[in-house]
Length: 445
Image (cartoon, rainbow, N blue to C red):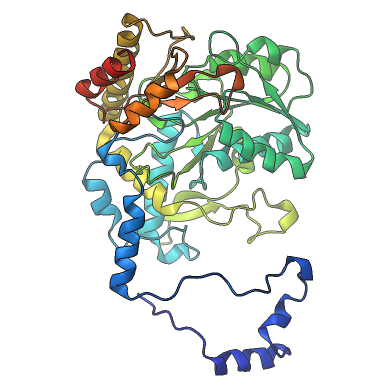
């Protein structure tokens, strides 16, 4: 059903104000301090016709570089992958085109079944027992996982690897600060991996969060961290930004991880200049009731027919706020459906083959750069991205490559000052051998 947007008339506004007992709309904002109110008219441009507005937007678009025309060797949490044509077609059907979990599940069986299939595919991918109906993005999912650990262990301190995505760590601090939860950072070592020995001397830790592949693209030994944190009576939380990696690597569940949180943007969701993402959150059965958000399950009705229901939904709208496990009211329903369609389209063997292609292409670039004399500072195994150290003055080469529509990685100095002059390079199946060879030729010219 489509609804028209009907703005209120002055008569409508007057009538509503009379009902609530105020004379003007401005009175509704009296609680806002005078110093915080804008008393000047908004500086808006004059109104445009439809054709003028189209021309204006075209002019704005022309100031940006269309990503499809560039060879972009950047991942860092947002990855470019081919998307089967079946996915956007199916997703556009009106039965699926909603961003929310249904509030009246008994009349939304199709949507609930789609979410149930999504949860099933996520648990298989991550090797866990149960998955939620998705979250806003990987950062919020990881923050919620740490809050789960605090509630479960009754400890007020969490450890987070310095190689978790920098943006994810920012969100974690935003979550934990107001709650009075201490966040300690686990540094990384010369091998590009999180320093396990640093965790071994920490006490009073509710959980440790380790990303694998980490922000440097390096594959972490999650089992070793799980052994250490379990000995300290804490929880092991695994995170990730590149979901395709689990088509090739050992899943987190087989490495002693208690809770897994990551971003599912790679699962058929376009990069779209930074969004949207998709928060994946899964755990073992032991922590199922601590999971925030919703869980969809299957049952049978009075006639013995199979049906789908919201089995667990410990949210502030359903129970007392102080007992809710999350303040997130809506999941990324449409993105979750997108990811389920993508995983189903690839299938198990297709997913594994795609992961292998990503790994092989990145290794090909790494080998070619080493042959050309470029330094690879971390020798540890990586997935589809890795760190390189280019010679001093590479920033000029970087700008020259931009003029040739090549983006030669992400400068790491912004996030890790000690890595000034280092770049994070990423290769997925969308880049050809010709693209890779051209990059090597240009950066070593």
